[in-house]
Amino acid sequence: MTKPTIASTAATLAALASTAYLLQTYRSISPIKSSAVCSSNSIPNSLLTSQARKLTNPKDTLALNDTRWTDVKVPRGTTDEVVLARFVRGFFGGYVFAPERMMLKVYGRDMASFEELKNEPVSRRIWSTSQLSGENLPPVGALFFGAFRVVESRVVDRSDVADGKASESYIDFAYGFDQGPLAGVHRFSVKRGAAPGSGGCEKQGKEEETVTIEFSHSGCNPLSDEWRLPLTLEGFHSIYAMLLFREGVAGVISS
Image (cartoon, rainbow, N blue to C red; front, top):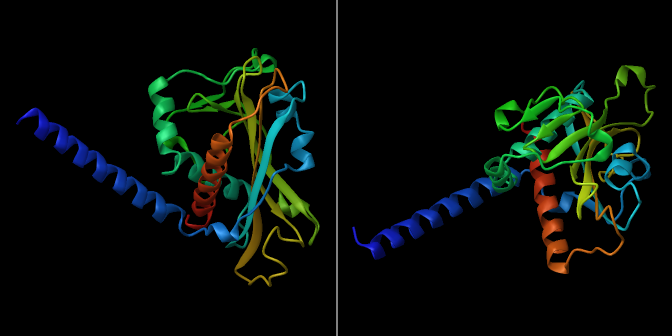
């Protein structure tokens, strides 16, 4: 086989692989329409004042903040932990995150470093999607693909909450370096109560209930206010975050 033929064959295979990947990604996120997702260039006050944000932004420098949320129906009795676990699995284990996941696995080193955690051992290392549970959340201290560390979580037992009272369960992932140019936190949360996040006062059936799934992010240069992503990267972040969120939510409703 001549060199031009080899190059042509390789290009064809690469194009086919790319097309197959894009098709699988589209199928995976399609159950959650972007029109059903609300977004804001801010984060909830509970995250703004959280230990996770203080860990990643100890000097409270200028940050890029954004939040996305949507309402979904889940079988009645589904716990907050199960909803969050399935979202985490869909987010980190799906097609959208696959290229980043592959690059992190090739690099193979720890990339999350924070002064406050230097004496805290990693409780679990997750390098494979097969390690992502759809029933249980990872423990605090777990490190996903060397880059995303679980720094805090809270799961509400609904049996301890009065009927109609709002509640929130969440898990926080920190990434980056508090002594470097980039650090941040991802918060995945599930909220319940009388006021759904985007679906209005929709009547719930006997066999299902509505929950609000939310993804909040705060990224910064922890050393200085003199930092801002180029507009092209801000645009990429917005699109990428939306795709990740949609696949995470799809993982909840498809399980």
